Length: 110
Length: 115
Image (cartoon, rainbow over all chains, first blue to last red; front, side):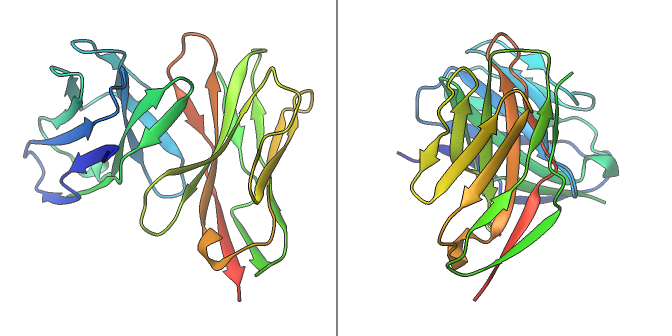
């Protein structure tokens, strides 16, 4: 049981490039989330999904897109990366009232 | 909108001693959940303890316990017998019990353990 995993762990992009972050969970959870963490701040919700085929906007959705084609996977896409998207990205899945987090992806946009 | 405030950016404690981390929150709701998460240098967010607002009894997990004061909207974390492995950032978080998927985090408290 790996829990929540994220790929990749680190990535450096140039402004304007695109990329996709992959989140996978093997706990059969319906709910999944993408957060970003910036220095001096707590995590902020980007997008979330309440089940396969569904997505919804969170607190800071601009510049990101998501897809949940399979229950176990939740993808976060950046179509045209900007330096303001330099951050650590966390995926989480939820059972009952508790969220379980992945190890994070550190993204730097130059 | 709900807000979570952690007024102590940094705390330190001697190994084996007890330390209390503060958290206050603002909400108009009566039913919600509160959490403490630990983030060590590995960056992994680890759930430490959770509290359901409708339960008056304070949650306890081994050396970790909370002091939940619903009327005061306060949710502090007490770590007893502090260990070197407790060194981390600690985040307080709030989630509504109904509908809203958002988990609102405080800005964190960095805890240092002094050997």
